[in-house]
Image (cartoon, rainbow, N blue to C red):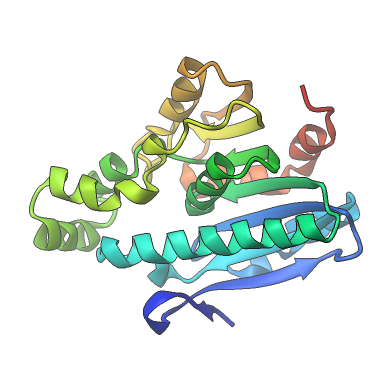
Length: 240
C-alpha cells in the first residue's frame, strides 16, 4: 500500500529484503512501476549480499501540479536521508543507490547531498526534466497542455521544477562511483539522456556509461534492471 507524503496523498511504497545484511542499497522504481515488477531485482540484490530497500511511486507523484510533485519528491529524498543516518548510527557503513527513471531523480538528489553514498546507478535518467517534460506534446499531450495551462511559459515551468531538476544537482558527486545507463531512443527524455553522461564528463567525475541504441525508455530500463551481472559487477568492484 502506498504511504502518504504531503497533502495526505499516498505516493510511495516501501518493501525491504535481506535486513540481516550490512550492505544497504536503495532501489528506487520509475514512475508508476509496481513493487511486483521490482521483486525479482530486489531478491537478486538480497542474494548478492545487500539489504535492499525498495521504493515504488504512485503515478500521482508526478502530475502537472509541479509544486506538489516537488514537495513529494523532496519528502521522499528526506526520508531516505534520514534512513541513511539511522543506519549509520546502527553501524552500517556501505550505502548505494539504484534509481530508474524518476527514481534516478530521487537518487541523484540523495547522492548529491549525502557523503555516505559511495556507489550510484542511474538507469535511464534525463539531465533536464524541464526540457523533457515541456516536449511531451505528442507523448503525453494532455499532461503537456495542463502544464501550459498552469505555468503559461517554459521559463515559469522551469523555475517551478528547479528544486528537483537533475541539471541543478550534480555538483557534489566527485567522491562517488557512478554507473549510468542511457538510451539513444528515449522517447520520455527526448533522447536527452546522453546529456547526462556529457555533464558528468564535463564535471570530471568518474563514471561508467552504458548506451542502448535498440530500445526506448521503458524497454531499456527493464533490460538494465534484469541484466544483474552488469550492475552487480559494478556494486562489488573496489571503489576507485
